[in-house]
Length: 156
Image (cartoon, rainbow, N blue to C red; front, side, top):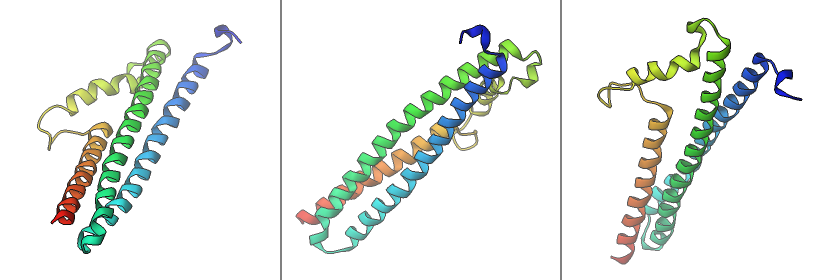
């Protein structure tokens, strides 16, 4: 099947399905990260409340939490790239096939977002990327701090 057999609508639908798949995957992976890191963090907190014999377990859980945060951050980078890749394709198709500028939603979104994401960190709109990065950084830091705390309690 050559390009002449594919309509603009087919191309847009293909790009949209690609976008939707990876956007949904991003949210699913992040939800799994929250559940998994919450369990590990709870185990870390429980080990901190126990006696010396549980501290090495806490060290392992802390480092595991930091590792999980790093791995899921890298997965999110990949998924974010795939989403942006799909957005680029959709923008090109919108420019080619949508004569009404207002209908080019993906194409105009980046310009609108640039304005909405400028200003002070607290008052500006956050992207999924920035919010997810904050969560990954906080959980990774909690893991490292918990591991260090458990190690200090163990050697003391």
